Image 1 (cartoon, rainbow over the protein chains, first blue to last red):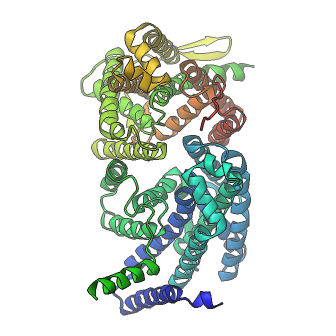
Image 2 (image 1 turned 90 degrees about the vertical axis):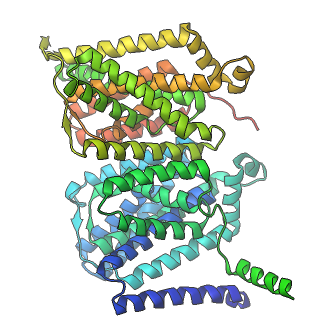
Amino acid sequence: MKDRFKKTNLCWLAAIILSYVILTALMQAGIIDAVYETVLSTIMINIILAISLNLIIGITGQFSLGHAGFMCIGAYSAGVMMKQMPGMGGFLVGILIGFVISALVALIVSIPTLRLKGDYLAIATLGFGEIIRIIVLNMTITNGAAGLVLQKVVTFPFIFAAMVLSTIVIVNFGCSAPGRACISVREDEIASEAMGINTTKYKVMAFVIGAMIASLAGALYAGNFYVIRPDMFTFNRSIDILVIVVFGGMGSMTGSYIAAIVIGLLNNFLQSFAAVRMIIYGLALVLIMIFRPSGLLGTKEFTFTSLFNRFSKRKGEAQ
Amino acid sequence: MTVFLQQIINGLSLGSIYALIALGYTMVYGIIKLINFAHGDIYMLGAYIGFIAVTSLGLGFFPALLAAMAGCALIGVIIERVAYKPLRHATRITALITAIGVSYFLQAGTQRVMGTGVKTFPNVLSNEVFMIGGVRITSQQIIIFITTIVLMLVLQFIVKKTKIGRAMRAVSVDADAAKLMGINVDATISYTFAIGSALAGAAGVLVGIYYNSINPLMGTLPGVKAFIAAVFGGIGIIPGAMFGGFFIGVCETLIAGYGGSLYKDAVVYIILIVILIIKPAGLLGKNVKEKV
């Protein structure tokens, strides 16, 4: 119990509350206007998507290109439920249903495909993501290619809370015993298998958690932007998420945060030059991979512990 | 039965295009173990080069085909030198992400230069229709099929009989050993990219003639399907890619012909996943045990 109120945890709590208060105050004061509010929600949803993909790619080292498929499941579960039960109740039930479906699908997908390695896995997950989209495209309940038009139920505090919760879940998973096992799978699969780690089990575990959180992000997307169509969840969406993860550094949640914010703001500035934006995206991916393949932060994380250590070291040097 | 034969004929035309693209995938994968995600976009560039050659320069079919092949070969080599060569010793995921970046760059660049809209590919071939026992065959389909077969024979000749081909085979077996035997590995890899990209460029022109319309994003889906074809036949194996291309093409048209056109893409992905699970090395591939 004492552990839960450690100095660092209190610092994190303070940082969360502070950023929430600042953002709300800026919105109340009108400095963040309606346009930037949309940018802000996009960034927060992208952060959730990026950290959930980072769990699969960065921590477990399994290259997945089908993340948009799980987002699609979440968005459509929430959307279809909101059509049946308008309002917040339907949305919450939709999120839960999205969790269940995406976990089941991830389980079905991952048990056979995670036996594959590297590029084969990437292509297989790409295929699965597209299959999910094609199924959604051809169902009547999802209204086919025309998509669903819903009401806006999600507000800023809700997305913020979801973002904080998913971050806590993923970061704590990364520090737990199964999380350590996942990292060992990333570092060397054969060696960790030799150490008695059931590699398939941990890969599936990370994949399922990542898929569920992606479906949460999808539901938030549906509740916030209230129009969903199957063509929003193509392979390109998976690449967009991948760009954030790679740019921030595979394995660094802090990096995903920074990259999502930077890319979100950049997208907003480059909105009127859509074609140029894609050229820059492409070039940036190539250049990052050639000159800094580990991304902005590599696997480094920002922690209050290291900050305190640095402070106390400085103090020590001064004395 | 007529429907079945008709779809087989259509499938062989579509399959020739997939097979030509798949050859490039398979050759590049065989030699540097890279899934060249940008390969589908090189095929798209081939279609655009052919388009420019026909509309602006007024060339006929064969000169346009050769121009597209030469142009794509050059682009392929430039891409290899600029983007992939610095990553020769990087992890495979790094290389894959780079390839995705190149693909984005080519798509967006083409959109910027040529416009995002669909362009109509001019009719450079007469389109006579032959009816044989109720099955409709067009002269375009025959030319596409013959061109593909000729290109494949040329490729087989290059790979099996020439010095470059022998070097390519040697590098794909063991790059280090090949280097010790005095083979210029970098040049060999460039030749591989040039040949693979030229085949994709030819496929681009053929598809432009077959469907009459081209757009900057046309490469993504055939690119992925051609990759599936390459995996199906056993990636890195040239006859496997040819077989896989025809197989995927025929499958797709058969499904579309029997009323499943909405699901034809999904079925192709399902074929891929089934193959990966049952026989990851592909139909003609051999399983290789991983050594520690």
